[in-house]
Amino acid sequence: MDRAVKFLKRNWFCFAGALVGGIGGFLYWHFVGCASGTCPITGSPVLSTIWGALIVGLLCFAFFSKSEGQKKREHKNKEHKNKEHKSGEDKSGEDKSAGRGGKED
Image (tube, rainbow, N blue to C red; front, side):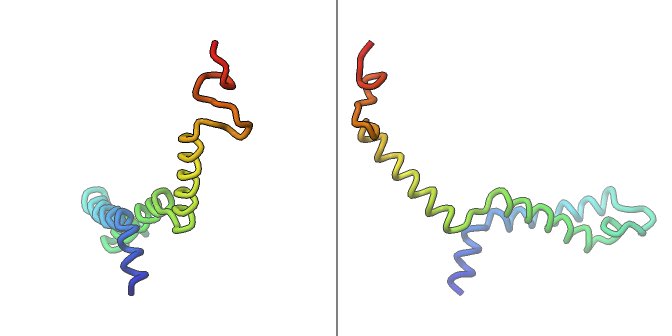
């Protein structure tokens, strides 16, 4: 149960996007739709709504969702860069804060 709640909290934006996509799919069916009713997606309000929700939800998960491993790696890299920046020195021991290689122009 905790994993499901954590998943929902982490990805609420994508679920909200799927809801908006479903509303958009329904509105597309209502205003544009298929006059003859033979179109496979836009001929039915249910299929049009499901299609809109799936497309927007999947796009959102593809572009905005991050796994726990990605978040941990990004956090670790950010901490590592902050430590290097605060020290003001590179690996050769030269002070980078005064310009090129510690030498003033």
